[in-house]
Amino acid sequence: MTPPNTAPVANNLEAFLMPFTANRQFKKNPRMLAKAKGVHYWTPEGRKIIDGTAGLWCVNAGHGREEIKAAIAKQLDEMDYAPSFQMGHPKAFELAARHAAMLPGDLNHAFYCNSGSEAVDSALKIALAYHRANGQGTRTRFIGRERGYHGVGFGGISVGGMVNNRKWFGAQLPGVDHLPHTHLAKNAFSRGEPEHGVELADALEGIVGLHDASNIAAVIVEPCAGSTGYLPPPKGYLKRLREICDKHGILLIFDEVITGFGRLGTGFAADKFGVIPDLMTVAKGISNATVPMGGVFVRKTIYDGLMQGPEGAIDLFHGYTYSAHPLACAAASAVLDIYKDENLFERAAELSGHWEDGVHSLKGLPGVLDIRNLGLAAGIDLAATGPVGTRGYNAFVKAFELGLMVRQSGDAIAMSPPLIIEKVQIDEIIDLVGQTIKATA
Ligand code: PXG
Image (tube, rainbow, N blue to C red; front, side, top):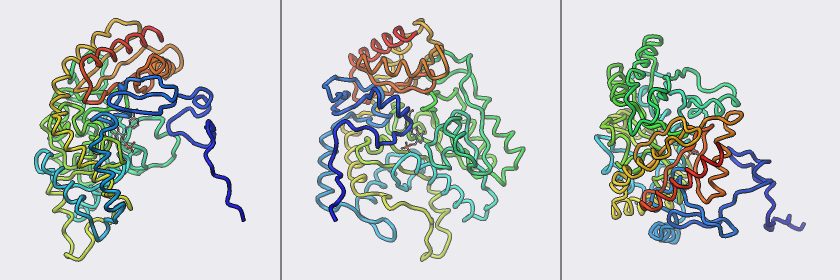
């Protein structure tokens, strides 16, 4: 029998079911990327695009980093793959110790997976397993937040709060409630953390009153909501959530898939806000997006709490074939060196003032309803020009035509450039966003 012909065919876009994409629209008029270096992408035709979004909020140290490439190549040479179930490889342990050393407070143990979605589902499961191991097996309910994004696993969409990501997929996790979102009109054009909204955290008391704390496992929030158009937390909000969780023995999970690894000018949002969660989910910047990787960082109390059975018993019945994949560990370790050697978190903090002034200079352009920023990221709400999402999509396409990559969420656009960005490149991004807004009003 002759083998089927699977040779590559140029320009046949049909077979790939693209994620979160209008497939037919895209395939008629594709936006392709062929090359990336530093803070730029290039299209196959050679058009240069400035990366205003660090890929998808993930290429924090910029594209094409030779040090990461070398570390991955070396690892591939030495050992391509090793299982992590009942055996291990040195780089996994080394990486966990390095992460533990850079994390705030007693967040000092790491579980690894391959994406933010897996990190979220893993964190929810670790919370359940922890409670059960500690004689509190009735604590099974989760509390998320409206407008939250926690990836696309069934756990993640259940606690998430973005309607399109939920409504198509029928029954989700039972026993989930949502806190109200924190996007208040009276906070429009806030610089950094908005003034109003700390009291929105008190809704947690209401949910506890309804179900009783003895039935609630954990609260999960993004410290700064990303995908919904970038919503920094109101002043004091995360501290208030922490206090209420402490009062009721509820675990607090920060989903730091976007905020982790420097986006806010600190290692983690937990550092920025001085609030230590019990569990933290990460991905994206952990490996600078070179090899897929995610993780759950947990406090010592959570780790110790899982070690309750006999010494020979498995502590956590959860894991992935690729948990702590050697290539991901090698990449993540090289990324940590870059973050440290180039002081990229401090650099993000230093640049954030220039960034803030830049994005807020767009106030007053046609249809700009709100501008928000924190660290090296920002969200801009644009007035609708048609059905919801039309203006946002038009802005995204226009920006790409002008040579800039932005993200779109409904009629909002979000930006989060690589942390290696230069001031003049920030100015260029702001100029291009301004042109985009005017052209799509
Ligand atoms: N949690 C948060 C807070 C995220 O932002 C995930 C979990 C899921 O990660 P994975 O690796 O499974 O995709 C994310 C992902 C956007 C955008 O345009 C944001 C994400 C992914 C794709 C697009 O805002 N965030």
